[in-house]
Image (cartoon, rainbow, N blue to C red; front, side, top):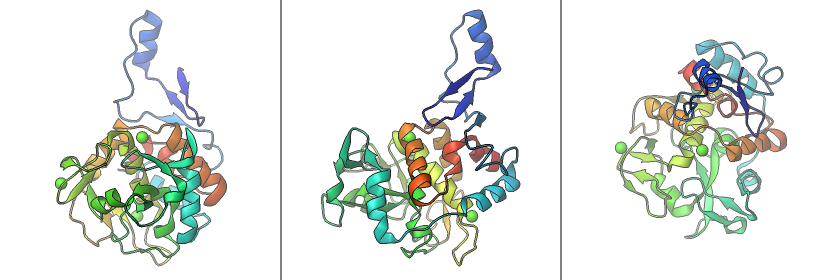
Amino acid sequence: MLAIRTSAGRRRKAGALAAAAVLTGLAVPSLTAAPAAATTHDYDTTYYKNAVGKTGTALKSSLHTIVSDQTKISYSAVWDALKVTDQDPANSGNVILLYSGVSRSKSLNGGDTGDWNREHVWAKSHGDFGTSTGPGTDLHHLRPEDVQVNAVRGNKDFDDGGSAVSNGGGSLTDSDSFEPRDAVKGDVARMIFYMAVRYEGGDGWADLEVNGSVNNGSNPYIGKLAVLKQWNDEDPPDAFEEHRNQVVYDTYQHNRNPFVDHPEWVEAIW
Ligand SMILES: [Ca+2]
Ligand SMILES: [Ca+2]
Ligand SMILES: [Ca+2]
C-alpha cells in the first residue's frame, strides 16, 4: 500500500487508482481536492484506541469521552498560550493572525487598533458560554486575530460569499456570514467540529452543534454544516495546524482535536 507520511506522523493511504497509475507509469491524480481519505495516525493505538473503527454517533460519543479528559486554563492564561501555539515559524517574536494571515509581534496583544486579541472561532455568544474557564478558554478554537478583523467577524456564522474584509487576508463577509481566507478554511471547520464533539451538554455548558443555518444568534449552533464539510476537504491539515494540535496536547490541555489527526472523521460523523 502506498502511503505518504506527513510531518506529524499521519499516513495517508493512496487509492487503488493512484497505485495502478504508478505501476503503469501514468500521472498520479491529485488527492488534494478529494474528500479526506482514510488515514492512520501514531495515536491510533493509544489515544484513539476506543474510537478507531467506529462511525456515526458511536464515533462521536467515543471521541467526546476521549477529548473531555483535559486540563483547563483560565482566560488570562490564554494570552501566553496563544503566543506559543500560534507562533510564526519564521519569527519567534510574532504570532500568525488567523483570518488576516499577518505576522504580528507577540507583545501587541490587547484591545487597541493594531493589536491582536483572542478570537473565539466558535463565537462565544452561540451558547452564551462567555470567558469563564470552559469552552470560552478552550485553546482548540481560540486564535490570535487583529482587533478590527475580529470585530468584523463578530458572532457571524460561516458561509461562502460576501465582499472583501479590510485587512482580512482575502476573507469575505456579508450581513449574516463570514468566509475565512482559503488557507484557514479547513482549520476553521475542524475547530468547529471539535467544539461540537467536546461539548455535549455536560459540565453545565450548552450542547454545541453544527447546523445548516446562518443567523443562529445566541442558540448553541454554528452553520453552515455543508460549507464547513467542504472547507475541511479543500484545506487539509498542514504542518502549522498539526504542530499547534501537538502543542495544545503536550503543554496545555492534554487533549487533541481528532479532526486534525483524522479529517475523514468529519464525514464519518456528519
Ligand atoms: Ca451570507
Ligand atoms: Ca489550513
Ligand atoms: Ca455537541
